[in-house]
Amino acid sequence: MAEIKYEIVKTIGVVSESPKGWIKELNLVSWNGRDPKYDLRDWAPDKEKMGKGITLTEEEVQQLKEVLNNME
Image (cartoon, rainbow, N blue to C red; front, side, top):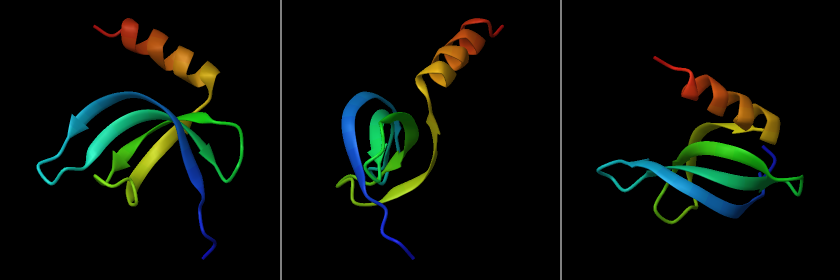
């Protein structure tokens, strides 16, 4: 399996933390040298391991923000 390279360009904010220290964060991440995207996932305390997550473009983040703002 090919190695996945990533760089956390900017930490936007922490959403939650598990009792084992894993942190769910929204970050701006560059995957394999590509342009950074918004990324929401769980990270181990040392940032060496990660859980499954999602990546979003700027446009998708803006649309998600609009959807969340319109929630009842």
